[in-house]
Image 1 (cartoon, rainbow, N blue to C red):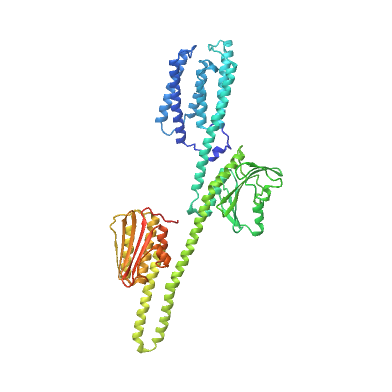
Image 2: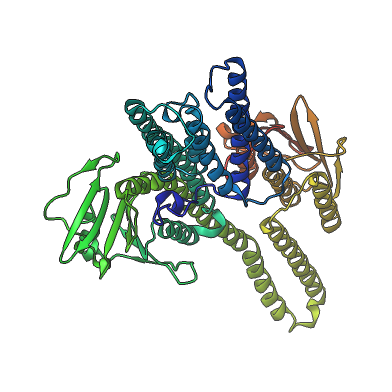
Length: 595
């Protein structure tokens, strides 16, 4: 960046792409354009030798030298490493050459004025508005120097001769000014759009589910403080349904990181944060005891501020010298405002305020998604805990109560020596109950344990489940699959594993089966999971689909829900006293319907 670039420039704080690779790319494009321009001008001179007329040999020599210079720059940029040194020398030589060349080709009236436009275009590509306008000013000075040499040089015995016309000189200066402003403005806008997009992407990338809502708010507020040079931040969130208000405080530390803290506003103080924090966009600077205010409406247009409004309504403002505020929403449930204290903005304050509104509109949905996912996880965890509690209550606890009662009976019978056989039978029954509950608890632990499937591990994982089931229950269980490798997404694989586990639990607890066969196959672009047993079957006879089972309120509820989650279908065939057949089918491109 040139020395005359503004230190508080918004484009620089946005983090516009300015790395070595980007600068080399720009210089290579300019080098190709420079070489093409020089070659074209030499061709034009060759085809029309009437220009130049007075210094033809010198002009040809200068243009030839410029072509050699352009070719050397092009070669260096395409062969050199990552070094960026020398770019300012290229910029300086590009400015000097047009001034020297046009001096010997009619000066300000030269037909090769296009070289000046190239220099302005190169400055716009490299930097932006300020640098391009400054470059046009420097070129104007060089052009004025040419005019002075042509007009007054003969008085000092100079050999340079040429015609000088005031009208053409003024018009060429006007061209330089207009081209400098237009090219610089277009380049600045393009760079700012790229920088804004990159910043929005960077901020949204920091919104991660693993960080939770607290970590997400810390990351977002930290980025806002860095971007707008703020010292403190306050996010006010109001829940539309309940009216509850939460405050998120953040403050920059010396190491560049930021703190985060949250609290709920007491009911008697909610009015402060609902009535006095308008308008949608505000920037205020303290001027002694008063405030200088600028405001934007929801659409980013400038609006008026009520005469009675003052940032002092905000209790957190303390001794802050400036305030930037912008409203946002998180879905239909939450509305909020972001307040940044002691910000240090550039000259285009309303432009920066408008970008703050735009940035919050982009970030809001991502933050709201994190909030919903965390709430969904919390509810899912609560449901899972409730299920585990129900399983323990209906299974282990009831069994332990029964054991306790039988132990009490056996204790009383032990006082009578004639009841020895009854004691043996009772102890065997207690042992069987305990063995059953140990297995139930182990199954429950396996169901609670996360299923970690990677790549093509699905078949091996299911085979291990079947083998463990056979070993622990004594039921002859077998797994059959003609497929050598199955590529399932981790989520689909986990759901299918849970279906197999739930089906085996039902077989052990309710069917009384002695044999179980689990099969997995692919047919007609669908995955097919089938489970057969020779137990007592269900309470109906025949074949029913998922929809029919729902209508009749029959079938295993957990398995039905998981099949719906996969977007698949299932068939349950029952023959009372002779076993059952469960078949689950799902598309090979199936996706789980929830996270």
